[in-house]
Image (tube, rainbow, N blue to C red; front, side):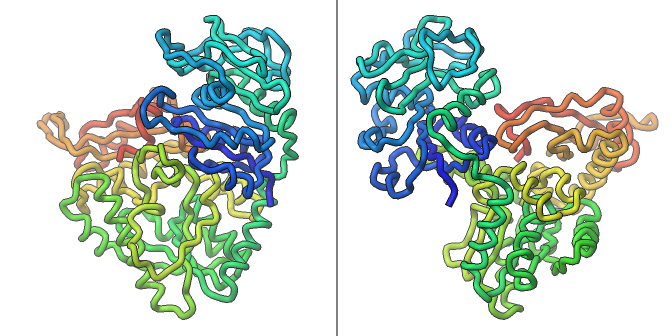
Length: 510
């Protein structure tokens, strides 16, 4: 068992970033509901607890609370923003409703030394995002940081390993936030960095073998990073009892089926390909709502696998490459989380499903999966592939999905991606793709008026897909892509570039 850092989620948009920062320190963490009981936490035996921020005021009716017995477990605690206010109030401090809101970058000063701020510079920039603030504290606490606005920004209990900060150490805008998180994990909670890719592989193989026994497992293979690395892991664990099944849903990129087959044949892993494209496209006909598209794809995806499973004997399990961000974005990690969008891996499953689902990566981030893949010997071309959504081109074909519109999208996207390869930009980018929009615009081609489709291209930088920034691709390359698409893809007369970051947008358009 790995040492555990437990993150209690009070609904902050940054909760997953806390998890990400903890994982970067090679410490295993999990996000749990904020209303978890102290007794259950005791059984989980975490080495530390982090209380996330949250959008609520603690004065609101129905605002999330915490089991007060958690503070008596003797486990190191770090409260962040809302979490700080909860612990301050628990210890008879005074929290004041915010007349003056602190939001954005701000410096902090340290009136006294503390383990939490060891090696953090005076006036170091932090990211504030709060209305309510701690006005005063009990004698059992020291004030270890104040904001440049004079408000309490950090607390430390004098006899217990309990700390709190009024800012977000997990975001990039807090310049030395990672130092603070590291200090809490190692100077205060005394973790030993036992969460590594090698240890994950070792424990996962054992768990897979113990769970599956001599039964067979169908693996949903898309050819993307997650499912491909999972195929290698499952093959390592149970050999040919893992049956990687590649379903052609009619929503794939140009030559996707052939490329996936070639990559796996070179690695001596046999895959099984089935064509269900007509069924998927038939079910999606006339559907424009993005959530309905995802639900339909999720349902047909599972029904397809169940049908394939019936052609084999001893199939009891379906393995999927679901990642932690998929779970988080689907609102599954917290009672206070908001569903941003459903994912085909975690939404739309039929109530009566004959296959048990295996999701070995459901607590991993994308870069952690890539690290696992490198150790397993997955070819670099697979590991380096940009993420591709489970619903495929359905979420990049806005509006009604037709064969004609999909073909236009495929042709344009092929040009975009090939140009990025040719110019050396592909490996500099987290994800790049094209989107066909449900509108047409006037153009002029060969002295004739045209009225054709608008195509958007998008490229983002990201670490884990939870936040992203648009890539500043040189104008010359964008011009080349636009010219090639308009001149060679019939049906497109305008190309636009998406310069929206996440948040406020999402990476995909649907």
